[in-house]
Image: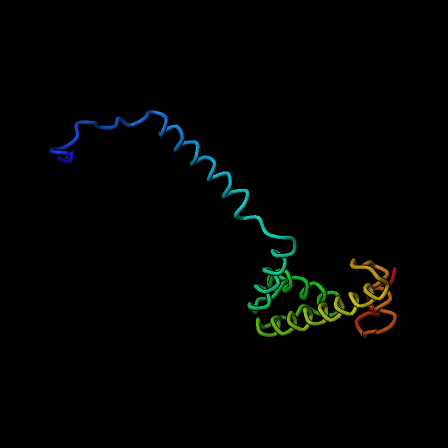
Length: 142
């Protein structure tokens, strides 16, 4: 006859006490790895993400309130205190940002021509000498 089992087996396994300690250790290791490993990006990835985000949005780089303060201060130096509509301040701010972006891109080309990656003051001075924009007459060249 062949052997057959009949009924339930009486052997039950007792839970080990060390499993709880291992689980706690594993959880702490996971949290450390998550903090160190997951959020780490390759060099340049964070900058590219910021650039893409800024290109998607239409917000200005300069805060509106501080720009309005500068406009009022400059206009008070030249003439009486004028009142400005918010739409006029927005247009002026857009124009100023476009001028700054154009100037910095041309200055970057000058820096690349001299085989550098960093923009120096001498690059800005050279740009102002070459282009001679009308607003540059108010900027002292150092």
